[in-house]
Image 1 (cartoon, helix red, strand yellow):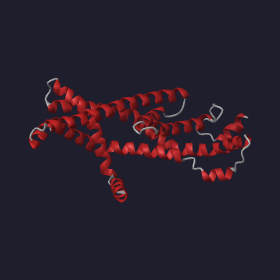
Image 2 (cartoon, one colour; image 1 turned 90 degrees about the vertical axis):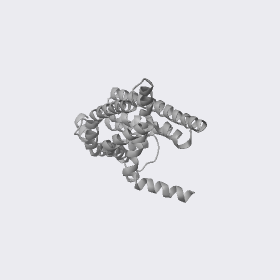
Image 3 (cartoon, rainbow, N blue to C red; image 1 turned 120 degrees about the horizontal axis):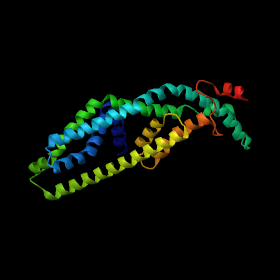
Image 4 (tube, one colour; image 1 turned 90 degrees about the horizontal axis):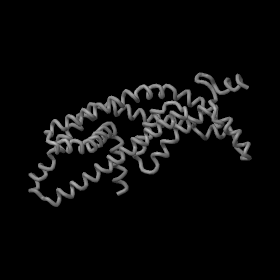
Length: 263
């Protein structure tokens, strides 16, 4: 079983380029299925209901691209600068730790800690989001097919299995439970992302939209997602303001130049 699990995981990793868009499409289709069924109950034909929901998904997607696109580009360009600033900030942090009475070798700390690892992790995650957006046509087409099939899925099951009411009712309960969980999780994640973006903006940390997006995406991971999402903005806040809460230097100046000019 362990060997089979490893083979399946390796296969999923190898098929990432195909599997990720399909999973995103399935996720969007599950969320969109409830509005489609609601519109059908109101008397709209299944194709028209699916098209209206897909148009709404398209509108949200375009709005998402407009809001986040520029921030992703600017953040990717700023990553090397943030890495250099964080490397410079390790020295005063090491001195502060030594001032508390702890023995700490600064050279060993610099060799042991990769200060840009967190920033590169965020960049990799956001580039993955960008890759999903590049496959938006495939995702949209898959969502349309799934919604069209979902509208007549129950009738097809009845025709294939001879109207087994017990099986269909159990299957419907599972679908309703999954839809309810994903809808609730999406609402909570969206609220978390909005609150994080507003709070980070009030604190003056750069790219609040990106941190709100990161909180929204990682909130789907139980327990650890929100903790992981908090690390990059806290790290960036330390780079910008230092330990004392004041901005260490303006953009474009190294920390040593800024401190020597203000001392």
